[in-house]
Every structure is written in C-alpha cells, then in structure tokens.
Length: 237
Image 1 (cartoon, rainbow, N blue to C red):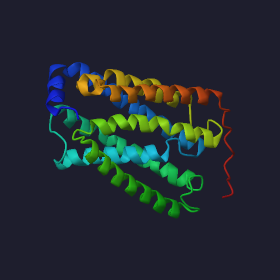
Image 2 (cartoon, rainbow, N blue to C red):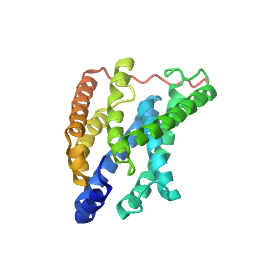
Image 3 (cartoon, one colour):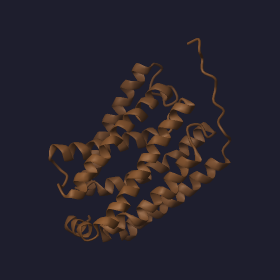
Image 4 (cartoon, helix red, strand yellow):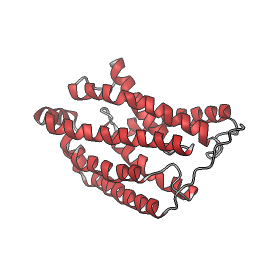
C-alpha cells in the first residue's frame, strides 16, 4: 500500500506540478464522458461500456459521499478540492446510465421495455457497489487512488469487446480512442508517480504498460472498423 504521509508530503512540496497533473487527469475524464454522451445521442446507443459506467459511478459517488459526509477521505486541501471537481462526474454518469437503459436495453439483454431495463441496470449497479466496496477494502485504498488508477484500465479494456460485438464504429470515435489511449497513459506516467514512489513499483508500472498496449490495439482496431451509418428514426413511433 502507498504511504498517506508520503503522499501529503509530496503534494505539499510540489503543489503546482501535482495540481496541474491532477487537473490533466480530470480533464481527460471529462472529455471521455462528454464525448461518450455525444456519441450516445448521435447514434442512439451507449458509448461507454456498462462495466465502466457502473464502476465509475460507484467510485465517484463513494468518494464524493465520503468526503462531504466527513467519513473516509482526508480533509487535506488537495482531496477537498477533489471532492468538488469529481462531483459533476456523477451527473454525467447518470446521463450515461440513462443512455444504456433507454437505447441499449435490448442489446445488453437488460429487458424488452425501458422499465425492465432500468430495474436490471439498478441491480447491476448495486452489484458493482458491493464489488467496489470489497475491492477497496481488499487493496486498502483509503484515498481512492488505487481504485482511480484501476478505473483508467477499466474504461479502456471494455471498449474492445464493444467494438467487436457491434462490428462498426457505432458509439465510438477516434477522439474517444485517443483520449483513452494517450490521455490516460499520460496520467499514468506524469500524475501518479508524483504522488508516491508506490506508483513506480513494477506491478503498478506493468498495469500502465498494459493499458498503453490495450489502448493502442483498440485505436488500431477502431481505425480499421467500418463507419456506422445511422438508421433513420421511426417518426411513426
């Protein structure tokens, strides 16, 4: 596990560099969400895989809830600012969840009606909450840094089966691929190692390298995939 004292010491010693790196990581996340939402409405589908959406929502709602309730997250200025910066993610993740329910209920096997799809999705989200709590307790992550690190990986790896299953660029774009590949890799390289030497350990570095390779493979596959031709909307419905 990382040392909380070391992280606080490093942040206080290099507040500008670490804050800029953190803002880059947050910006990458916001671009990912906004681009996914745009693609979802454009193609009337979900652009962020359900595993990623439910994991992100569990992570962000737990972090924000823990901070504003005064339980579980440090009141250090850096993490206090994080509570306010991360809070809008929850709204974006609500929209992404709605797109899954509204547009992709049948595709994902959630149900033939919006109501059934919503109930199924709530069940999946509840299961993800249980998994997230168990994982965070297992890896001992009081500052939500490891779970954030893992979330970068989760957001990328599930894009490949989504692309393969659809057989086209439906709900996907080169901008989104580059954000997942290059943008998040830069977060691995420049942000986390500034916080603690723990994030330079061989296992953690291996995760970052694996993410880079998966992002490169996904981007290559996306560029080779045929473009998606949107179907005309059924105005009679």
